Amino acid sequence: MSPIQLPIDAITSRFGDRFNSLRSQSLGTRFANLRPISEFLDVKRVSKPANFGEAQSRVNYNLSYFSSNYAAVFVMLSIYSLLTNPILLFVIFLVSGGLWGIGKLEGRDLDLGFARFNTSQLYTGLLLVAVPLGFWASPFSTFLWLIGATGVTVFGHAAFMDKPIENAFSEEAV
Image (tube, rainbow, N blue to C red; front, side, top):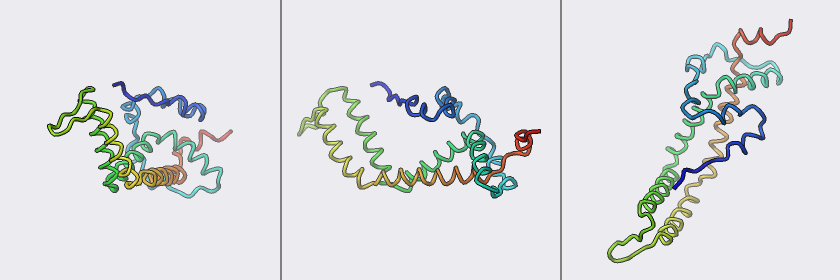
């Protein structure tokens, strides 16, 4: 069974050159350039932007500068959302374990002594159990909460975190 390949190029090509570095980076490299927590949470640099143009400039700068930190925030919020929704976590483990167990059979039938099930029946049984439990676990509301919480956190931090002094002077025209 081959690993799932996500079409990252199809998703990121619509955003221009902003995500070109994401396509060529491995996950380890992505988190290797995390900024220090003291720099990420520097309260001395937090200030209200004067106008929308300044807020937009801050967001553009901070999204690229703290991109790995924002990815870490997304991962932490994802873990939090799964831990606070134990039914969804159970469904994920159930489906993963069921698919792993059916895969371990390698196409052979499961013989329980009193009944014999082929792989098609096992997949159907897993589907019949997982779909109602999945709807009960409300993955859509969890996903929407995750997107909203990440957006508020990331864009709030990016808008209120001022650029370093060195960069503020380098952008001014002389």
